[in-house]
Image (cartoon, rainbow, N blue to C red; front, top):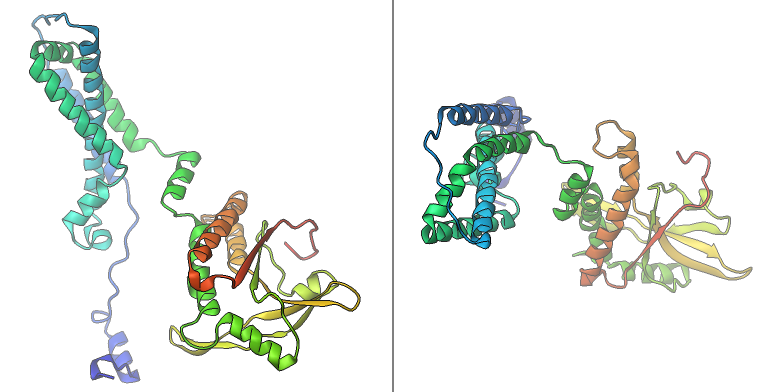
Length: 359
């Protein structure tokens, strides 16, 4: 190994003793109300400009066909909304200037793209509206300016009001839920990906050692028994609760048999980290025993604990929805991975009986 990659105790002590040499960067601060203040100032500026402008001359009314007149009114309205949106984004840009280093890596380009990101449909509508406005202005400038002048006061008022609304309107729960779903930001989806990438994928088809199916075969040879379905049965409950021992708290016909051979891997600095899986025996008939590898999805327990913790971002009422998101995301991830094919079975169920000590 090259000398530059060797880490010894002396080097660690020298690095950690000098804070200036051991810096992980500045933690991003919480955004404050600079964008709201900027919106108020811009709105006040536009208000005073509006008051100072007075069209004393008489506005000439231009006759035109109904379609053209309606088109001019529509483009004018869309232009006002677009202008309010642009002012709103520039106010957000002022707030982000204070977070240039911590959130945008000192990149003005990254910051600008971040502020003006969003639904591309908005920018398409703005572009089309601008094109139509130019065409109408060129074809009938007298009508265009007549409509603009006659609606100047109402347009200014609309612009000011919309700028304030854009800045101070907060998305409701339905809108927040839609944002989370569209961007795959839900807690359940995140937990599912972590569970899949940090555990299931490693256990079912590791890059070294025995695969999950081969570990079952080795277990069969060791104990002289048969496990007909060589899959990992993953229990996902609607409540998120799974008992630590399925034998003690489950049906009396379920017994813990033994452990599959451990899968050992070096992982994140831990040498020979052991991954264990438990074999259960289920008495089907008097002399018939069915063996299978069963375990609960452990991230559900963490999600359940989160729902009981204040300010965790997951309420008790949202727990069930996040568990469903977990189930569907995990199912999609496993189905998309050929290496996990025929190695798992997801079992989603609703508990019918509340067991003492469950809560």
